[in-house]
Image (cartoon, rainbow, N blue to C red; front, side, top):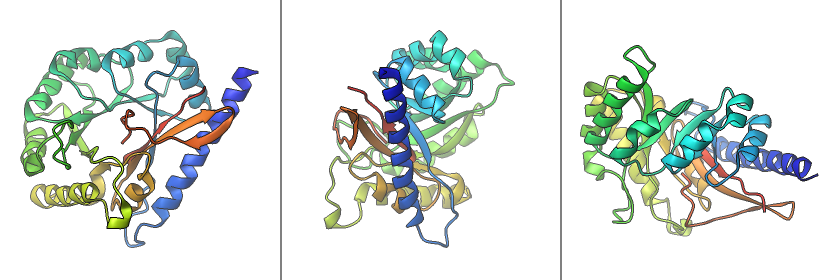
Length: 274
């Protein structure tokens, strides 16, 4: 019975968020490309059985915050057997001493938290060594500290262009996919557009203008549980927002938590069964 109930609730949770994301995306200016946001289920602390169930419901992209937890899940026999097309996103702070361990993860799809040129170089050399010179380039995002908070990781906004340029010119094993920020939690939208979102938008425009990149090819990752719809509708290209979902007593409710790393070039969904 528990498995049947979990299947129904996970399916409902994913569908509910998809509907809200699509509604938010529909509010973007009609002159912009109609690129649907990517849904990423944040699976940290969740058992393999729940990941498999979300996969069976059609979910393919999953995000993890901690290297060791991702390594364990990605190599779990149940997930390897049941989820052959799973795509793992690393969305936590990456320390240089964990790079080799992370890059050995099967089906690693995107590393979102490159916050320095030196870290990019380490990931680049390790990817070549671990995967071989002929392997597909690893997709990465550059993390920007748009809020200026010391507790947040990320580049200074003014270093964005030079760091992206360094990755594109010096890190041949990496594919620059976009920019990410966490920003302030709980911004009051009655005060106007979220300044962190506006900062990331302006930095993307600066990157595209300086490096002659098409705007629609540079993704943004921004937003949290309380503002993901604003993040999706604000984004002017590919979008990805972050949502926390909590399934409690077989009823779905939104959960906004400062403890959950939830990001917007994808939609991040945290699914919990209690």
